View 1: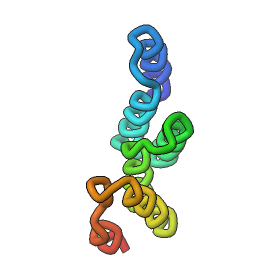
View 2: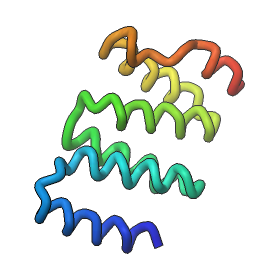
View 3: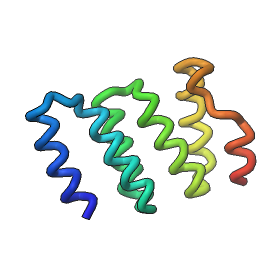
View 4: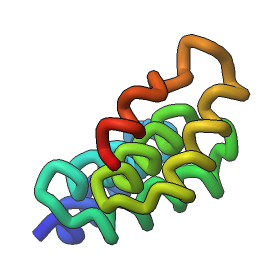
Length: 99
């Protein structure tokens, strides 16, 4: 299970000094890749509590919202990404194509 891997990874992170935000984002990406969008969403939200400007976490939340057709949420995450800078702003066509 991914949650077992996550617990092991968190323990390893404490030993190795890996920043928790990156690890939690990685867990979100794993959950996203296996199709558990609810768990991915939770992991990305947790990463944002650790680092409110984590573009990786915001991008993950954006992808999950688009995939789950939660358009208001996707628009909100896109706006937050765009406020971080043009390099982080997903193309509007990504969201429009999902509709």
